Image 1 (spheres, rainbow, N blue to C red):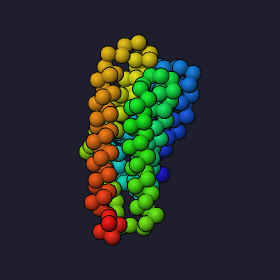
Image 2 (cartoon, rainbow, N blue to C red):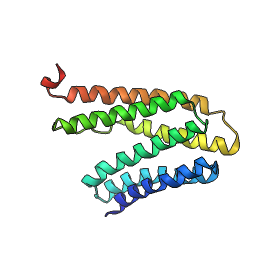
Image 3 (cartoon, one colour):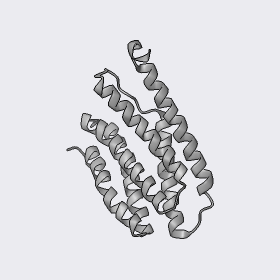
Image 4 (cartoon, helix red, strand yellow):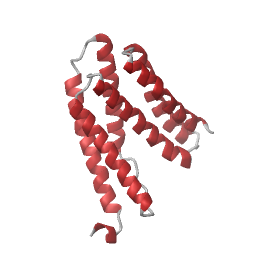
Amino acid sequence: MNLPNSLTLFRILVIPGFLIAVIYRHWTLALGLFLVAAVSDFFDGFLARKLEQKTVLGSYLDPLADKLLIATSFLALTVQQLLPPWLCVIVLTRDLFICLGAGIIYLLQLDMSLVVTRWGKWTTALQMMYLALCLLSAETGASQLLLWSGGLTAFFTLISGGSYFLAGLRALPREFRS
């Protein structure tokens, strides 16, 4: 297994420790584990491109790791009442629709690949920054930026979800669109 895929797998393996830290309200540990996972997300993609080590496994594993980290984090922090449930619903619904779309493409055996858009990358970055702010707020009690950054995260999540939905519709063969 190459280095980028190892980093992606590492990100997945950090999730249970992060979740346990959140459950027991060990905010410093949870923030540390989350930041390690978020930074590994940047480096696995960077290294895959730089070292020319892009793989089919990585093309599936990386978005899966992102979805697992973000979904687990939003759910856990919502249960701990650190972020608003409406934002968790928006984030999880977007990811659910993206996964459903990918599943439909696979089941119909369509020759399509959904490309990650800039909106999607910005959304993931904003979601991770927002989650880090929530954890930092839990540790320090400072929550001044949470409302503003939560609104921005929701906005980008909705825009990127819509852009993926429209791109998926446009990419479908005509017989599937009628």
